[in-house]
Length: 84
Image 1 (cartoon, rainbow, N blue to C red):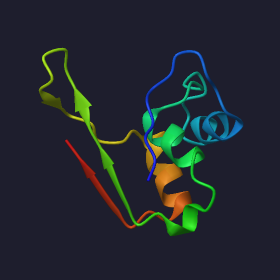
Image 2 (tube, helix red, strand yellow):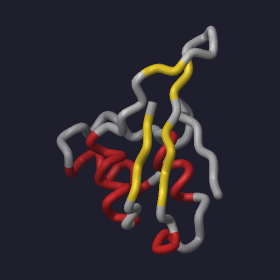
Image 3 (cartoon, rainbow, N blue to C red):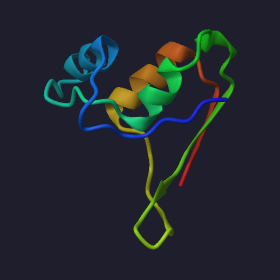
Image 4 (cartoon, one colour):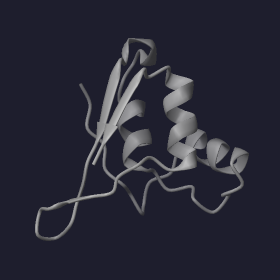
């Protein structure tokens, strides 16, 4: 199990590589999905990912993974993705 959060300070070479592949070179800062995946030693064991985004009142908001995160999820071989 792993938890990730968006960061406006941290970057990672894989985040930058995938951002470039999807034509979003400026989006190099870690997204929550990428941060969570990077904490896992063996990505091949990830079966399901749940992505949740909450507003300031704690209510769910749309958290569909962006194109960069979709590529990371595919690369990891995650079979199921749930999102708010």
